[in-house]
Image (tube, rainbow, N blue to C red; front, side, top):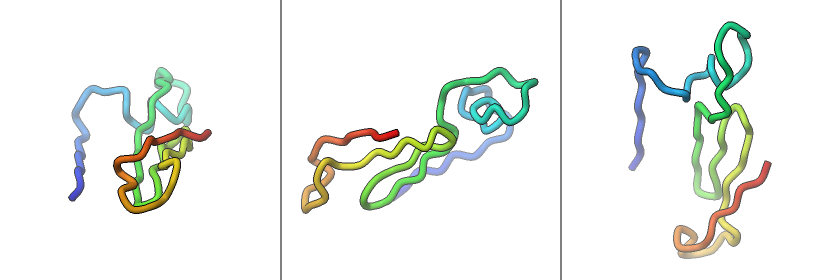
Length: 69
């Protein structure tokens, strides 16, 4: 299962232009704009924060999740 939302016409703080500081005409928002997830963890972009379980084992979805920078 997964979720994918794509739009070019919504107002939100989660656009590449507002989160990457690539173009100074856009006001910076300290929010991620992309999340990539997998079996062993997830990655926020452009902040490059990694989220993962404290232990990789059976029942990993029931274990606490930690963030690293």
